[in-house]
Image (cartoon, rainbow, N blue to C red):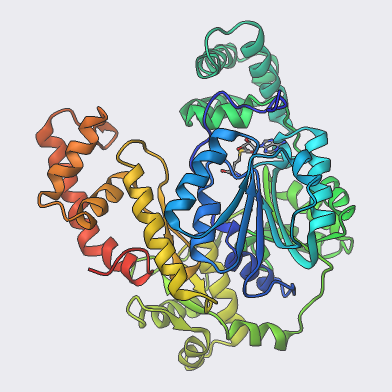
Length: 511
Ligand SMILES: C[S@@+](CC[C@H](N)C(=O)[O-])C[C@H]1O[C@@H](n2cnc3c(N)ncnc32)[C@H](O)[C@@H]1O
């Protein structure tokens, strides 16, 4: 069977992950002062692209040639259809990783990414991934890999085992219904407060929170035949077979010295010189469950002056609206407080651009007057990007092409949201990434772009044709009047706030 125990009975969710964007990968490496050899028009490969949203958005918003493989033919066909609407050619394969590794018609890739794959596939598939990276990633190339890690997942392994056993032996119906029955079974066990469930109270919380998640996601995350959380030391040793060196986390906040590690553990960690022991121990200190790692084939450190020069190539755009930013920052270690004397002037300088891009050198010039050094400014920009308050941008090799492709892709994504609550991101070519845009917002945009006279009425007609209703404060709105009222509010926000932002991002045709 082609799916090799991988869940293929239900569709995977339509996720977009900004970490996979070429610009974000390069920016994350810069945050750790690591060099790479990715040019302006990289060959980019995504292994296991799911519904292909990240791949399609990356292809539309960045220069280069984009490739992807996912052995699920329905997902490969869907991704190819959406790609055609975007107009930038993407080479889509429905090969398994094992088949893909045997191909002789592939180029040398500059970037290979795989998100949500490594822990959920067979040993043969993992070996094929290592083979592709060993053979097809060029020296200086970047690899992004995310995976479930120890020790965060260790106590949950027995729960996952029991859920699967129950789904296979006692539950009935299709996968989604079996998942539901198995979760009910787990809840009854939690309620006994006995044995394992009494020993690990967090398991009860876990069962409750899994119960609230999208069932398609839960099927893929917990009900796959393969599920192997590993330590950083195990994964990095495996990737060393493909000559890969760990370089940075794609979670920018984790790359900042002092953030992401509890303060009282920092001296202990500082005494560890071996990288594998350091990173693994760090995961134990924050009980990490999931890693988003960036590797480079042949790691080379940049000097301070090189980092400074490379930062000069970046512009920044505010995504957050607030006049003042919260100083409390969520980190892997809990939380940290940002220094007001640095972050306040930096944010004021970014906002002075009034929603336009502002260059690193201009920011530098502005904040020097507040006594902020280039290094402090750079760190603040990495942290604020990590939190999603702003986005970095570089000059694209093909800016007009990116805008045209992104506008076409966004139109297609909005058109598809008439029928299904799919992608909740739209391509934003000026920042080489995406922005979050919900389904009803997309339908308002669609109505505006298609010149509908009665915008609210058009949105309501599309939703009601699918038997869909809006929600307010967790309650479904039943009457047409209530739904139209809610749509009106969303339209006002789209017109006042979202549309101007999307126009600045090159994400939609300028009115
Ligand atoms: C959990 S999903 C992640 C999808 C996507 N990367 C994302 O994060 O949205 C895993 C994907 O890998 C694909 N896949 C699993 N095993 C594979 C294999 N051996 N060869 C090719 N694709 C595989 C599945 O079809 C599925 O789309």
